[in-house]
Length: 242
Image (cartoon, rainbow, N blue to C red):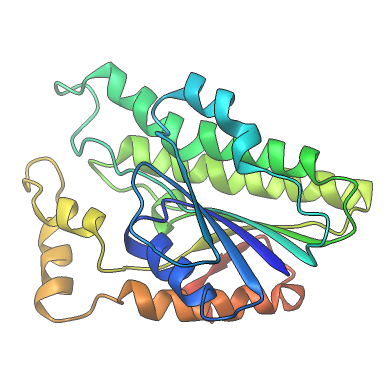
């Protein structure tokens, strides 16, 4: 039996990944999100709002239940937000930075920390995949909080992998960029004003020219990746290279 814990599983890449994994009867999926959109006997929904840090802390034990028979334990920190698009210092609400970092960095760090602690003694293959972005590797005007949060998740992933290597646990940690995918976030990007995001037209062309990957296409590649994590030696990986 394989256990996959996926955040943001109610829509987009998270939902597509959960549904693709559930095609295998040996897989059990725990979806962590505010709402439930999947009905399957091997699917368990854990409701949670990642912008509510005390609630996340209070409900961690409900996410990471004992799975003594699991052959593989996988955490996919998929949930994420873009935040407000706009230039820092130009009427950008300070609380929006907190919101983006809570959802994109703080909660994934809490989940990864708890996952590694709860299952530390279990003799199963353990993998953590933190969904990253190309925006964490280069600056994009108007996306300061998002870029910074994804850069943080990249470094967090690299540091935790270093620690696991030093402990000799065999745990694999990845920061995976899914590429440009046709999700709600892309719709949010396309609605931006050019004065707050200079390259918005490029993203509008992606949609107009049918250049966006579907969540289902990305999910198939991600499942193949999850089946072959031993082949990957680097922490920072991209779906585009698969």
